[in-house]
Length: 265
Image (cartoon, rainbow, N blue to C red; front, side, top):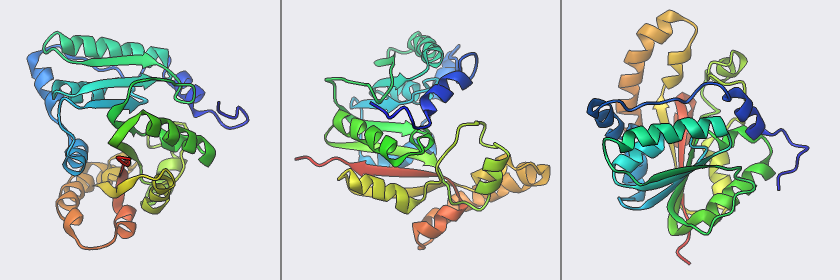
């Protein structure tokens, strides 16, 4: 069980999203076609891991179900948990709407990862923007251990977090430009890699992602509306192929994709 003397990001999340947020819909085949398009982050993850349908995937903090839906319509079997009953309810409605246009294998339950127990195991366990809200290392270690136990031998653990090292990070946090009032740790490639190494994961990849994406939230309209789109397109085409270290690239990245593999033994 989690030490209750710690800041509990789970409870803050429930309060923030009790009445609104993370609500998606699928009303047409046109919507379905859009849902089926895997974004750059998933293209990167699937290229590295070689995971293919109908592999089984687990999401921690599934929110409105946007990742589950996209993966499910692409043939994966998916299951997600979320601490918020309200958010989970919206996500279930969304998956039901998607299922009216294409049969999918997807399920969601309300659960706290610290108490979560399951006999199921998965080819991949992942989260988007969840673990960084747990400020204490011991809390994050508990989460990683849970995900490790849910991952099949040879399976993958995926973590997508805000990059805590880019040059606009201070402004983003001071003005809550990320859209939340929930505290976050400032992840770097090296810090996250160390946490995965302590979990005894193998084949660890740290991938800075969405270069200059943070400009979209800049309070200056010149930067957010004019400089951002040009800078974003050019940098995301060129920077991934520049032979410099990830510790340098992370200063320009909005997010980090961190990938590790559980041993087969």
